[in-house]
Length: 224
Image (cartoon, helix red, strand yellow):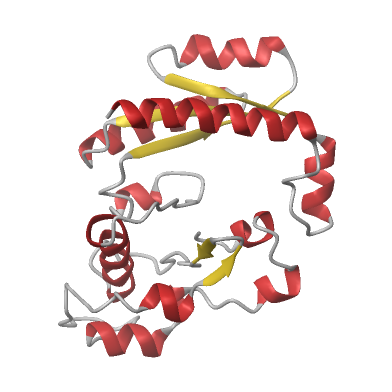
Protein backbone atom coordinates (compact mmCIF):
# COMPACT_ATOMS: atom_id res chain seq x y z
CA UNK A 1 0.00 0.00 0.00
CA UNK A 2 1.72 3.24 -1.11
CA UNK A 3 -0.20 5.76 1.01
CA UNK A 4 -1.43 3.93 4.14
CA UNK A 5 -5.03 4.27 2.94
CA UNK A 6 -5.44 0.52 3.14
CA UNK A 7 -4.85 0.65 6.89
CA UNK A 8 -8.17 2.39 7.50
CA UNK A 9 -10.00 -0.06 5.21
CA UNK A 10 -8.65 -2.96 7.26
CA UNK A 11 -9.87 -1.34 10.46
CA UNK A 12 -6.58 0.03 11.77
CA UNK A 13 -7.31 3.20 13.73
CA UNK A 14 -6.36 6.58 12.29
CA UNK A 15 -3.92 7.37 15.12
CA UNK A 16 -2.13 4.03 14.74
CA UNK A 17 -2.11 4.26 10.94
CA UNK A 18 -0.61 7.76 11.04
CA UNK A 19 2.37 6.41 13.01
CA UNK A 20 3.31 3.89 10.32
CA UNK A 21 6.55 4.78 8.55
CA UNK A 22 6.54 3.71 4.88
CA UNK A 23 9.43 1.46 3.88
CA UNK A 24 10.79 3.95 1.34
CA UNK A 25 11.20 6.51 4.14
CA UNK A 26 13.31 4.17 6.29
CA UNK A 27 16.63 5.57 5.11
CA UNK A 28 18.71 3.61 7.59
CA UNK A 29 17.10 0.32 6.52
CA UNK A 30 17.52 1.11 2.82
CA UNK A 31 21.19 1.99 3.28
CA UNK A 32 21.78 -1.10 5.42
CA UNK A 33 20.23 -3.43 2.84
CA UNK A 34 21.34 -1.84 -0.44
CA UNK A 35 24.60 -0.19 0.61
CA UNK A 36 23.46 3.24 -0.63
CA UNK A 37 21.69 6.11 1.09
CA UNK A 38 18.53 7.39 -0.63
CA UNK A 39 18.95 10.67 -2.46
CA UNK A 40 22.60 10.24 -3.38
CA UNK A 41 24.05 10.37 -6.90
CA UNK A 42 26.58 8.24 -8.75
CA UNK A 43 26.02 5.40 -6.29
CA UNK A 44 26.78 1.71 -6.39
CA UNK A 45 24.29 -0.48 -4.56
CA UNK A 46 23.10 -4.06 -4.30
CA UNK A 47 20.44 -5.10 -6.78
CA UNK A 48 19.47 -8.11 -4.62
CA UNK A 49 19.19 -6.79 -1.05
CA UNK A 50 18.03 -9.00 1.80
CA UNK A 51 14.26 -8.63 2.24
CA UNK A 52 13.03 -11.93 3.73
CA UNK A 53 12.71 -10.54 7.29
CA UNK A 54 10.91 -7.29 6.35
CA UNK A 55 7.29 -8.57 6.43
CA UNK A 56 7.68 -9.93 9.96
CA UNK A 57 9.58 -6.91 11.27
CA UNK A 58 7.54 -4.10 9.78
CA UNK A 59 4.15 -5.60 8.94
CA UNK A 60 1.02 -4.98 11.01
CA UNK A 61 -1.35 -7.94 11.29
CA UNK A 62 -5.11 -7.58 11.63
CA UNK A 63 -7.67 -10.36 11.15
CA UNK A 64 -5.13 -12.61 9.45
CA UNK A 65 -3.97 -9.95 6.99
CA UNK A 66 -0.46 -8.52 7.26
CA UNK A 67 -0.18 -4.91 6.06
CA UNK A 68 3.07 -3.45 4.77
CA UNK A 69 3.11 0.24 3.89
CA UNK A 70 5.59 0.52 1.04
CA UNK A 71 5.31 4.21 0.21
CA UNK A 72 6.19 5.79 -3.11
CA UNK A 73 9.44 7.06 -4.59
CA UNK A 74 8.78 10.77 -5.04
CA UNK A 75 12.17 12.19 -5.97
CA UNK A 76 12.08 13.70 -9.44
CA UNK A 77 14.31 11.97 -11.96
CA UNK A 78 15.16 9.13 -9.61
CA UNK A 79 14.18 6.57 -12.25
CA UNK A 80 13.79 2.86 -11.71
CA UNK A 81 17.24 2.18 -10.34
CA UNK A 82 17.29 4.05 -7.06
CA UNK A 83 17.93 2.21 -3.76
CA UNK A 84 14.33 2.64 -2.57
CA UNK A 85 12.81 1.15 -5.70
CA UNK A 86 15.27 -1.74 -5.81
CA UNK A 87 14.34 -2.63 -2.22
CA UNK A 88 10.60 -2.58 -3.01
CA UNK A 89 10.94 -4.63 -6.20
CA UNK A 90 13.07 -7.20 -4.38
CA UNK A 91 10.53 -7.39 -1.55
CA UNK A 92 7.55 -7.88 -3.85
CA UNK A 93 9.42 -10.50 -5.88
CA UNK A 94 10.29 -12.35 -2.67
CA UNK A 95 6.68 -12.36 -1.46
CA UNK A 96 5.19 -13.50 -4.76
CA UNK A 97 7.85 -15.84 -6.15
CA UNK A 98 9.82 -17.18 -3.19
CA UNK A 99 7.16 -17.35 -0.47
CA UNK A 100 4.15 -17.87 -2.74
CA UNK A 101 2.07 -15.57 -0.56
CA UNK A 102 -1.28 -14.15 -1.59
CA UNK A 103 -0.21 -10.56 -2.17
CA UNK A 104 -2.46 -7.58 -2.87
CA UNK A 105 -0.71 -4.38 -3.97
CA UNK A 106 -2.90 -1.32 -3.50
CA UNK A 107 -1.24 1.07 -5.93
CA UNK A 108 -1.72 4.78 -6.45
CA UNK A 109 -3.96 5.91 -9.28
CA UNK A 110 -2.00 6.41 -12.49
CA UNK A 111 0.92 4.66 -14.15
CA UNK A 112 3.99 5.46 -12.02
CA UNK A 113 4.10 2.01 -10.39
CA UNK A 114 4.07 0.46 -13.87
CA UNK A 115 6.84 2.68 -15.20
CA UNK A 116 8.98 1.66 -12.22
CA UNK A 117 8.12 -2.01 -12.63
CA UNK A 118 7.19 -2.51 -8.98
CA UNK A 119 4.16 -4.64 -9.86
CA UNK A 120 5.84 -7.11 -12.20
CA UNK A 121 5.43 -10.81 -11.30
CA UNK A 122 1.78 -10.20 -10.41
CA UNK A 123 -0.73 -12.77 -11.68
CA UNK A 124 -3.46 -10.22 -12.33
CA UNK A 125 -4.07 -6.50 -12.35
CA UNK A 126 -7.39 -4.91 -11.41
CA UNK A 127 -7.89 -1.43 -12.83
CA UNK A 128 -10.42 0.66 -10.90
CA UNK A 129 -12.21 2.97 -13.31
CA UNK A 130 -14.57 5.81 -12.47
CA UNK A 131 -17.20 7.11 -14.91
CA UNK A 132 -15.36 9.53 -17.19
CA UNK A 133 -13.29 9.46 -20.37
CA UNK A 134 -10.04 10.47 -18.67
CA UNK A 135 -10.29 7.45 -16.41
CA UNK A 136 -11.03 5.28 -19.45
CA UNK A 137 -7.93 6.59 -21.24
CA UNK A 138 -5.78 5.88 -18.19
CA UNK A 139 -7.10 2.30 -18.16
CA UNK A 140 -6.03 1.85 -21.79
CA UNK A 141 -2.54 3.14 -20.98
CA UNK A 142 -2.32 0.86 -17.96
CA UNK A 143 -3.29 -2.10 -20.15
CA UNK A 144 -0.49 -1.43 -22.63
CA UNK A 145 2.16 -1.02 -19.92
CA UNK A 146 0.92 -4.10 -18.05
CA UNK A 147 1.33 -6.24 -21.14
CA UNK A 148 4.89 -4.90 -21.48
CA UNK A 149 5.56 -6.20 -17.94
CA UNK A 150 4.12 -9.60 -18.77
CA UNK A 151 0.89 -9.21 -16.79
CA UNK A 152 -1.70 -10.93 -18.98
CA UNK A 153 -4.79 -11.05 -16.78
CA UNK A 154 -6.29 -7.55 -16.70
CA UNK A 155 -9.65 -6.75 -15.18
CA UNK A 156 -11.83 -3.71 -14.70
CA UNK A 157 -13.86 -2.72 -11.64
CA UNK A 158 -16.14 0.25 -12.20
CA UNK A 159 -16.29 2.47 -9.11
CA UNK A 160 -18.75 5.14 -7.88
CA UNK A 161 -21.48 4.26 -10.36
CA UNK A 162 -24.66 6.31 -9.93
CA UNK A 163 -26.65 5.54 -13.10
CA UNK A 164 -27.03 2.91 -15.82
CA UNK A 165 -25.76 5.50 -18.31
CA UNK A 166 -22.46 5.79 -16.44
CA UNK A 167 -22.03 2.03 -16.42
CA UNK A 168 -22.80 1.84 -20.15
CA UNK A 169 -20.21 4.56 -20.86
CA UNK A 170 -17.50 2.36 -19.36
CA UNK A 171 -18.71 -0.81 -21.07
CA UNK A 172 -18.86 0.87 -24.50
CA UNK A 173 -15.38 2.37 -24.22
CA UNK A 174 -13.66 -0.63 -22.63
CA UNK A 175 -15.39 -3.41 -24.54
CA UNK A 176 -12.17 -5.42 -24.93
CA UNK A 177 -11.62 -5.61 -21.16
CA UNK A 178 -13.07 -8.12 -18.72
CA UNK A 179 -15.30 -6.15 -16.34
CA UNK A 180 -15.56 -7.94 -13.00
CA UNK A 181 -18.36 -5.75 -11.72
CA UNK A 182 -19.35 -2.35 -10.45
CA UNK A 183 -19.32 -0.61 -7.07
CA UNK A 184 -22.23 1.77 -6.51
CA UNK A 185 -21.63 5.28 -5.25
CA UNK A 186 -22.32 5.17 -1.52
CA UNK A 187 -22.78 8.08 0.86
CA UNK A 188 -22.24 5.65 3.74
CA UNK A 189 -18.85 4.59 2.42
CA UNK A 190 -17.94 8.23 1.86
CA UNK A 191 -18.97 9.02 5.43
CA UNK A 192 -16.83 6.18 6.78
CA UNK A 193 -13.84 7.69 5.00
CA UNK A 194 -14.52 11.12 6.49
CA UNK A 195 -14.80 9.64 9.98
CA UNK A 196 -11.72 7.41 9.60
CA UNK A 197 -13.34 4.01 10.14
CA UNK A 198 -13.47 0.90 7.99
CA UNK A 199 -16.10 0.98 5.23
CA UNK A 200 -16.42 -2.81 5.24
CA UNK A 201 -19.69 -2.87 7.17
CA UNK A 202 -20.95 0.58 6.27
CA UNK A 203 -23.17 -0.38 3.33
CA UNK A 204 -24.61 -3.85 2.72
CA UNK A 205 -25.20 -3.27 -1.01
CA UNK A 206 -21.60 -2.11 -1.40
CA UNK A 207 -20.33 -5.12 0.56
CA UNK A 208 -22.40 -7.51 -1.58
CA UNK A 209 -20.93 -5.96 -4.75
CA UNK A 210 -17.41 -6.54 -3.44
CA UNK A 211 -18.19 -10.17 -2.61
CA UNK A 212 -19.56 -10.75 -6.12
CA UNK A 213 -16.47 -9.17 -7.69
CA UNK A 214 -14.19 -11.34 -5.52
CA UNK A 215 -16.10 -14.48 -6.55
CA UNK A 216 -15.76 -13.65 -10.26
CA UNK A 217 -12.06 -12.92 -9.84
CA UNK A 218 -11.52 -16.27 -8.12
CA UNK A 219 -13.18 -18.06 -11.03
CA UNK A 220 -10.84 -16.42 -13.55
CA UNK A 221 -7.75 -17.06 -11.41
CA UNK A 222 -8.72 -20.69 -10.77
CA UNK A 223 -8.91 -21.30 -14.53
CA UNK A 224 -5.18 -20.62 -14.72
